[in-house]
Image 1 (cartoon, one colour):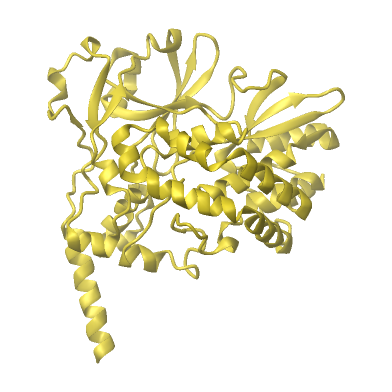
Image 2: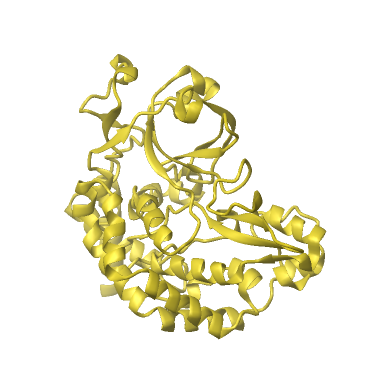
Length: 418
């Protein structure tokens, strides 16, 4: 009887929590006015925007669905205004892209560099299961975006520089409605984005001069079919990159979130990893409902970014088994020590100074403390990560994104199996 009462109270609190949420998911506030049609953006260099009021919460909602990064989402931030016809000498829209949550446009500059405009505000509606809509619980999924920090990618890029890892050089911008957007003007105009390099295609923008092309993971696999043992990945850099992911709490690192810079050596080729899509770095999940949903037995990979890692086996991806099974413990420990040396405490602290002051004041101290704590534990983390990868069997199904490729069966199992 007592258990039934507790369950009933929990259900009622859940519905009251959800009921406190506004349904409007598209409103952006610019200088305290919502009538954007009256603004001539060509007369301004920048605008102050509140990314979203969608995640504001009362005490009950905070208890049930967590504090997350709600204040960061509702803090006015200054964004530079960009017009595509003048940006980097003029941009051409190649195609619309994006994943399940992110809307994006792929762009090419006059000089042949390929960029992406990735929406800072997410649309999780495609992730909402039918049962959640039927029960009126869709806000639990939608509200989950508040666990993502709107400026995470900016700080991660700064940290990645110090770790000598290639990143996409993201920059937060505001894109007003404009003729250059063409058919995309209505959907993409008057919104905030991360402008960054694409992890595939276009001219070489990386720090390496010998790069012949930049490709995604499925193209890397097809190149492996062509070149065989003459193509190797930069394994040490990939190990360091994956330890870096764990350091920053970026828990969702599947194969479609990686690009590869292909270097021509004397008689062979080397593929250097490029991490993209940093939406889930510093993922801050809390509250009664998210804590239940993120239970390791339900979603082992969905973990809060805290000083201690909740469940390391949940962070091992098929991507890791595919590329890193067969590596040595010594390689993992060496890269862990290298990261510790590269990311000194002062280096970590300074990396967050790229954030606007108001965001730094809100969240930087807690995030920095968690990174420092994880950094101190990196050798143990690296050893555990290695051992968990080693225990896994080679893959029996294709990596995400390569399901439609006709790959030789050894190359389905692992990259070095061919």
